[in-house]
Length: 440
Image (cartoon, rainbow, N blue to C red; front, side, top):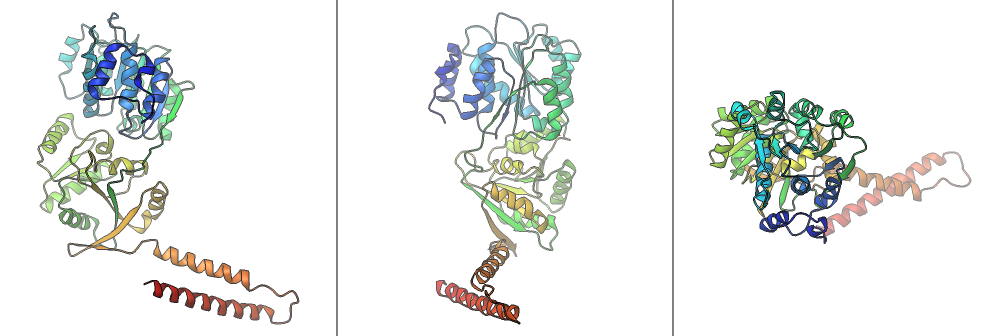
């Protein structure tokens, strides 16, 4: 939190009433940096983790700029999932209800009656929130008019790219004015997203918020070696041993999510699944079942790490490490919410070592355990061998610094030096071993 208050932005009175109702006193770092840019009409790219307050970073200044007397679409906000779109829509409604003039906000997404949406668009809303596919359909049907829209928001842009929606966003943006203000929010900026950004954004302001804590302090990060076991069997044993309130198992692809969910079902577990190939109706039904605690286990792709909010997750298990390691943080962040503690366990093989080292450099501290006959056994630090090798290297360097080449060399001096170095290293190792045993 910063020391500056929201009063510095000179918002309309109804916005301050809404902020008071929501209990917001001070802007977060991303709000403090993005709000002035949006008010000035500048395009911006905001890179930050979930939970940094980015939604209100664009909602507040957009509401400030909306003119209720103009009966036209003034801002379009796109989100990759229906759940996220609905969440944004509800946050806007919490604020506009305090306005004396009607600010018309509508939410459009797949899985609802399109004709009904078209019929209701005889009166154009001021702010549109929704998924790109449905918004694009309404624009193509000439029911929704965006040719005078000033602001386009693309939330969770990297997820939008992964789910194949960037084409729809491109088509929507293509119908908007040349001088469009575009606001893009994303946890990562993948290379494949950059051509789209260059197409619509000329010299955008780039705001990157470094996370204060790379991961919540009350998350226990655990590594579990696969060894020679079948991975699915190890996962099943882990889920049974943890007996979680609610566990989310992450895979990298939709195909793998289905494969893992099917195999766990065969083993007798009641398992839910969440991925991008599910129809909106299937996903709505699944989310209802999850909220009603019909499942103790959910297998999911990274859609559930960011695009969907699932409450009550006690355990996260990485069946596969994400290709983009920033997603490890998002996955882990599904647990230990609202003051609770949580576990993020990763099944790993030696081929994952480079990724694990990079995560450690990002600030993650891993525990190391194995599951044997249903019991958790604490293992030695997996880097122990490396540390031993490092110690050996240190002794070698010390020996080389002490046993030097004589000023006057005589025949056989190399053998003599080698002999002295060997004796010195033996003494050092004996001494180190003695010191270690005394410590124990």
